[in-house]
Amino acid sequence: MLAEGTKAPLFTLDDQNGNNVSLLDFRGQKVVLYFYPKDNTPGCTKEACSIRDNMPDFSRLNVKILGVSRDSGESHRKFIEKQNLNFTLLSDPGHQVMEEYGAWGEKTLYGKKSMGVIRSTFVINEDGVIEKVYKKVNTATHGEDLKKYFEGK
Image (tube, rainbow, N blue to C red; front, side, top):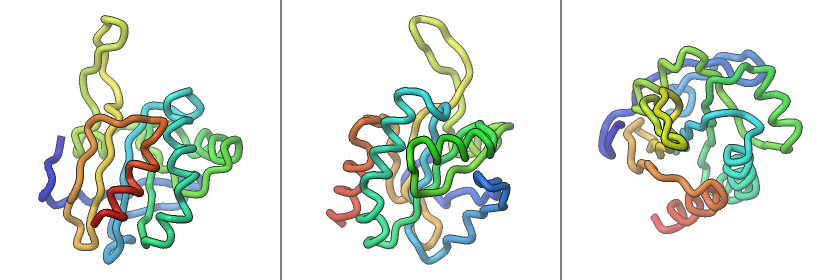
């Protein structure tokens, strides 16, 4: 997993509407790049809704939110509509960006090992440098935790 102080790897992925979104599009702004396993699952829904509920504060603080999973744009659109999400979701079906950030690897669930998304979040500063890494995420409070981080700066 990438460390704080590291230059964030550049990428371009499709959003929920099939538009190309590049990390370079957000130069000069703070970005929260969060990786999650799957749309419409309990933990991922809690996490997304926690972020959604804090979006007015993120907007006020000029922080852009980008969620990334392997799901398709269509799946993302349905997730956004169902949960009334107010931020961009990106598709990384081949998990290339996840691998670059160290958000793809071996996981153990109920004693069984498998390869998959490692739930993690990267705060990227205005110059494209990773300033904060969340390796352990509390899905229910992640939005509030991020808000506190930005307000404490």
